[in-house]
Image (tube, rainbow, N blue to C red):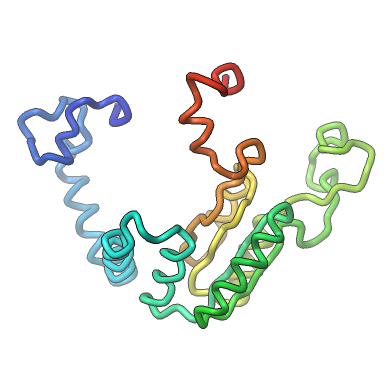
Length: 206
């Protein structure tokens, strides 16, 4: 069992193999070698190298939207998918505009596409946000399928619900990056609850 989150040695960062704990993932030398081999596969190499170069170029200077745009441009992508939550439609419009200003074609699909009531996919009426009313389901599989049909080269997830984002990743043919992680309580800044886990949010997390 790997417990990197609780490691106090960080042998991976200082290249000190002698100090690494017995359950260090780096003990899996065959696995590590196979991972290195996969980085050299044609579908991975350029993308990984480009993403890693951006880390240095924009380190502590570029916001994530800038990094995303630069990744698309440097990879030669021309058609980008934007899968967004209805609750962030204003933000989606801004992102769409920024991507277009960078010269990218944007195919955007809202989460409520299809207009299917939640009860039709097995969600009990009492488990709706507003029981007794028409409430369209989030439709991440359709979002992915629509972007696949448009043959987007890279997809951006903007504010999809927890779990719905997972299904979008699963069914997207193109690689996906998350631009905004939805968190209605913290203004879409999930890290805030982590930083405040021993303070303001102490009694709200478990």
